[in-house]
Image (cartoon, rainbow, N blue to C red; front, side, top):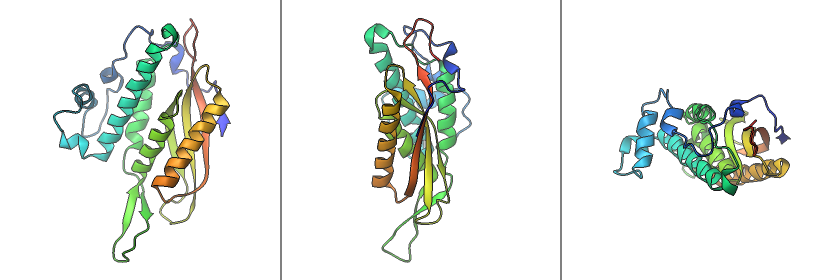
Length: 217
């Protein structure tokens, strides 16, 4: 678990002013998936109605939709905080996060699951596990997952794997405690919902939103 509040990512040097809403449709432009980012944003704006099977039945599209929902929730919390003293994340930063979400939502490797029927083979995709990691990390107050990586041979049952999670932390939050909370949330989620044998969950705070007139680092 690492705490590096001043990482190499300087996407916050020109933040969107807190009174300017972030256009998520523009921020996620450029997707090469089957479902366009504009369509995802429109679907979210419509309250996910009427039901769109191409989105709702696609694990990749659902993962991107969930990430968009969490980004919007984070933006709303920032705008409501202490007279909007915390600058909202700029579109280029959000675009970078969504680029990672699109990459990580792809199926990737197959992770075997135990089955009581020897004639059947069960598995969960690596993309689904990464979605669990993002959901757990984003659920920690003040944290937003930038990227997550699963190291190790996940195709071998019982093999040790190491999970690396890179997050952005909200300035004012104690970063070591934030990293520990993300680590605990991710570990708990993976233990409850997967059969991975975790060697470690390493959390790096590589970016920080600053409460200052000059913007964010």
